[in-house]
Each structure stands twice: as C-alpha cells, then as structure tokens.
Length: 588
Image (cartoon, rainbow, N blue to C red; front, side, top):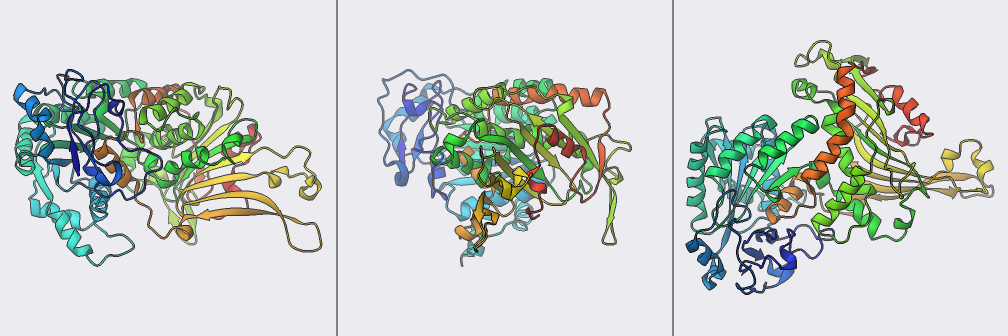
C-alpha cells in the first residue's frame, strides 16, 4: 500500500469521488483495495491510501497548493489542531498506517446478525478489508466479547468454493470482533467506546464507519452521541443509515435536517440494498456499453417498462413493523423507484458518483406525482391450498385488527421528458404471492407492417420483443425474439436468448451488503442515496399516501399464494399493457 499526503482541495480527484478509474467496470473482489482512504470533498483535507495494484503510488502534492479546511472529512465537528495538522502533512505522515474501525450499532438485532456481520466476514474472506481493521458491536444488551463472537459465528458461512482455510479465516475474523454495551443517547457511553477504539487503533491514522442497524426514531440520538464523543480525530467518519428514511416528505426532511446538525452530507450513506444487487449494478453497463441497446432506449422503440417485486410469504409475525409502513413505503418508494431512475436516466457526464446521482435526480424531478386512479392496492387474505391453511394479513397477531395497510400495490408512473414521454412505467410489489421474484421487463413496440402478422393472429403481443432482467432469484438477462421452428412449414416460435448467470459464471454472486459496505469503506457514493434524491422520491409518493390514509381506501383482498388482486390487470389494460410475468410461457 502507498500512502499519499493530503490532496489539494482543487485536485480533480478530490471532488468527493473515489480514485477508482472506473466505478462501473471494477473487478470483484478488490483485494486490499478497501484499505484506501477515499479523497475528501473539496472543502476537506484527508489522507488517501491507494492500492498499488490499481493506482500505483500516488504522488504527494505540495502543501502550498491550498489552505486547509478547519474540518477533517469527516471527523464530525472536530477540527485539526496545529500539531495534528503538522502530523497530517509532514513527510513522516507518509509512513503512518491507517486503520478502519467499523461499529455496528444495534449489533444484537436480526439485520446485524443475518446480513451485516456475514457481509463483513465475506469481505474479509475475500481479502477485501484493509490490513488493520476492527469491528465493534454496540447495543443496549449486556454481552461480553466472547458472547458476541458466539452469536456472530452462528451466521458466518464461506463461499461456495469452500477453501480449506475456512475455519481458520473465521477464527481470525472473530478475533477482530469486540462488543461494547451502552445506551444509544449516552455521550458518555460513546466516549467509552471511543477509548476502546483508540486502543485498537494504536496511533494509526483512524477512519471510522458506523452502521446504524436500529429503528429510525433513534438515528439522531446515536449520531449526536457518536459525532460528539466517538468521531475520528485525524481521518474520516462515515455513517450508514438504513431505510426507512421517514414516512413522508415532512418526516424525511426532519430526519435529514437532524442528521445534518452533526454530519455533512458526504458523511451520510443512505443504504438501499437493492442498489447493491449484481443485476441492478449491471443495468448501466448493459445499456451504455452495448451499442445494440442504447439506440433503442427511448419512447420510439419501448412500449412500456415493468418493475416487478413479489414475495411468496407474508409478514410471518413481523406485521407490527410492516403495518406502520406498508408495501408502498417499504418497496416501491425506494427499491423500485431507485431502479427506475437508474434505468431511465440520461448518459451521465462521467462515472463519478455525483454525475450519476445528478442524472437520477433529473429523472425523479421529471416524473408526475402519482394519482389515486393510477394505483391499485391489495391485502392478502387467508387461503387453503393442498390441505394447508395460510393465514391472512390481519390474522397476524402483531397486526391491528381491521388494518387497511396494503400488502400489494400496482402503479403506473410517467416521466415527462423527451426520451420517455407517454411510456408507462408499471410498478408492482406484493407479499404472499405465487412466486418470489424481482425483475425489470422492457416490452418493445410492435414491428410496423410485420410480414408475419398472420402467423400470430390477433395477439400481436406474441410477436413483441421483450428484454427481461431478473434481479433475483436465479439472476439472468434474456431477450425474447421471434424465431422459425425447424421444418418445412412456416411456424414461428418465441424463443429466449438467455444469459443465466449460474451457467455462465462459476463464481458466487456477492451479497448486496458486501458491495455496499465495501463502497462505504472506500468512500464510493454511487450506490447510496443523496438527500435531494430522497426529497424528489417522497414528493412523488407523499400526496398519494396521504390520500390513501385520509380517505381510508380499502385494499382489494386477494388469496394468499395467488397472483394478486384483479385490479392490477385492469390498471395494466388501461394503458394497453399486459403484465409480462403472468403469461403462460413464464415459469415461477
């Protein structure tokens, strides 16, 4: 590893981005790449640790290029003293090693146990974490280091390739895991955590990442305590915030303003794990690096776009949380809308995170606010199938009796710009449906004057080309084309040009949390949500959500394990669209 001194704020690489030459085309895994400290935004100074394998030895700019800021990226509200400043820019600083301290706040919760700790171990297993790192769990529960390690060890698994040193790697990883018990609103408890962190950092350049795996109503308390008592004094401090980011425009704005009392925007990493999924990250590559697709990516050739999310299970005892948000807030306003923005955006100026996020914001601001007549809501009811009775949503004891919270929603959205004018973007998301899937379906227009229309009869949809990007499960990209069936007659068939990832690539696809955690450590913000993105997203959905709640719109009931409410079909038919996942040729 090579260590460079603080980069000049005017340096083009310091404009809030990463030193990676290509954010979209990076290989995975990135061995030891995560040990680099990302360059700070223009108003801050920081050290940048650069991976030799990728970028070589970074030059050391002159310290006369610009005056330093009074704030380190990211050390919360802490400034640099003159002695600390001399340490940072002195030649001796080039010999200093850096360390990353990762604190999982809410370490005893399900998300931490099932996703965050396994993702961190997977990064360690693939040699993607820096040489010096420490992981601390923080929660109110009383627990020793040994008890934390026992809890974490139950959820750790190795990759499919099953290297011989799997158990050894687990033991080494667990030795880096520690625990500190404290209250979420106690600056004294976080000061005690800070003391432990400094002991493990042992005088190295300190970088700290806090993952808030806690309910949003205590985000601000934790951020205040951590910022005032446990921020890094000489490196960066970053905070990963889990959704939900509020319930509407007002609550989201209040949350953002509360966080920004103690953090800068570039310290806040709002995580949407769907943006870390392999096929979502591949979406821009598919479009912008393949000439065959980009010219077709507009209203001239695309008839409609469908974003579909379905789960084949209900709330299963967790309805209390779900009932306060519902399927629209839980899935559509974030996961599906973020995918839509990536799909529909114009070509960004560069692969820099800010350029990409700028284009996403333009899409969101060009969209019409949702109208009630363009939305169908549903709720699953009990159903008996194969002698097994499946409970309805309101049968869940954690759900209030008579709840009107939708477990299914379908919506038609429109983007009022030159590229997408008039093209319906149909969203559909639901629980307790017939299958589990998440996919993007692009249905192209009919071929003008099709010579073979008699072969298809009146059902021209059979002759329509369709691009399907299956995000999960069984990740795949396939294109439906019309093809002649071999033989003497003229019979046409609809066939798939299929890229099934499990057949094409032997390597296991990393979990979304692995990619996003690594990006946060590197300072790569492309897959995280900026505050103006969040504002634009809530502006689309808040009027609809208020109308649904004020008018007490009753959801259409649908049987557990069915294809959803009938109203969704009428909504699609209103715009001359047929849901692509419901055709006879589709398999569950």
